[in-house]
Amino acid sequence: METFFSGYCRVLDCSRLVEVEYEPGTSPEADCCYADCVYRSSCPIAAQIDALGSPIA
Image (tube, rainbow, N blue to C red; front, side, top):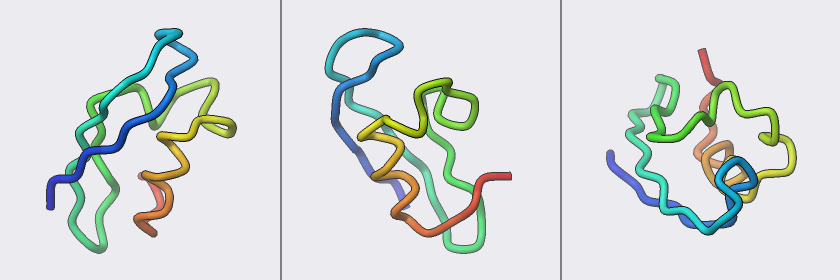
């Protein structure tokens, strides 16, 4: 499943549209630094990705 999320990215200091590839039972793959982002805990885009319900690998 391919999904798009939008929100403010602190790394880029601007709004961002992120493409996420996700299949149930797997970790989401985002076209941003989602897995290693230092701002992940406060990122509105990461919150939307986390809502997919899959833990990252």
